[in-house]
Amino acid sequence: MTRRPVSDHRRAITHAFAELVGTETVPLTEAHRRVLTSDVLASAPMPAFDNSAMDGFAVRAADVEVDVPLPVATRIFAGDTDPTPLPSGSAAAIMTGAPVPAGADAVVPVEQSVERDGHVRLQVQPDVGAFVRRRAADVAAGALVVAGATVLTPRHLAALAATGTGTVEVFRRPRVAVVSTGSELVPPGAPLAYGQVYESNSIILATLCAAHGAEVTFSGSSGDGGDFAATLDAAVEHADIVLTSGGVSMGEREPVRDLLSDAGWFGPIAMQPGGPQGFTVWRGVPVVSLPGNPVSVMVSFEVLVRNGLRAAGGLAPIDPTSAPLASAVTSIAGRTQFLRGFLRADGVVEVVGGPGSHLVATAANANVLIEIDSAAVHLAAGQEVPTWPLTP
Ligand code: AMP
Ligand code: MG
Image (cartoon, rainbow, N blue to C red; front, side, top):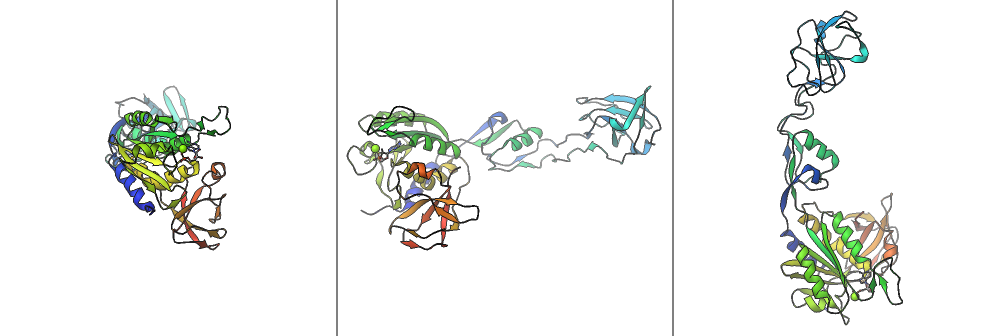
């Protein structure tokens, strides 16, 4: 049987996901980790007015003589919107953040002053501009605050708030449903009878999707009987994308393949692990059908689904880099192999565990996938190979 090239299958998925790109406007309080659609400019300069960096006295620097009393003409507090201009030859008591009055050009900190009987003696000769935070010193009105495509961190949100932005336009997060299949599966933590298997695909798929900008809106499971159709119908009700696991290979009782193969594409792709795959649009919703083995699920997501999902949510792709192999590797011709690897601090990559797609606990020690070209059968130590960073 001819195997579909990995890149063809990925392209089919990515293409369908691209239809899902959308935007929405949200308040800053809901914008953490969201992806900005376009540049945001400062609606106001920051600071918006010259203000005091210290509690102290606003003066005209030229009026100050060390230890010679100046009359205290007024007291200015943060939030005062109309401070009286400073008469020449006087000082104004001023608090941090309060507007520096017209006429003043420096602030002397309270620690360097003695105030008594309506006068203040200043212990230092201030430079012009001392302890004055200048209007627009941080950002000018109309200047760029955060660039489009930025994933908003707490720091970006503070910058947006400080420059007067209350709501932002962000990419919609794709809503994903995760469905596992298998009559042998039981939830982790429950008693395990002989022949049963703990269910681990839901948790890895849900967390992988969330890590790449999606919102997981549905998690369901079905056995290998007829209940898969009802579970899938519930999933498409709640989601823009459905990811199923299991039930796609060539055995008997393959519920996903049995229901969907006439409506979509099912077959082997030229990779290992993760050969058996399917892709269908079911009731208008793309359904990516991954195999059941947990390592195959992890590899399939990272190699076939990750960048398409990221693009649907406005996120940039995460592409492979390369590293030299720590030791020789043999592979199967005709299939791209994705071995679990550990990229060391010295930049060399080691193979982690064997190629078996059931070795899920061993795979937890990997931090990259090592891509072995489909034409390669033997690679020597030191050879450069593509390495795909695994989702942290
Ligand atoms: P399947 O593709 O349905 O034949 O499943 C292949 C292998 O993966 C079998 O050993 C299943 O028990 C196992 N498997 C399938 N789904 C899951 C799951 N959700 N969690 C853990 N193992 C699974
Ligand atoms: Mg199964």
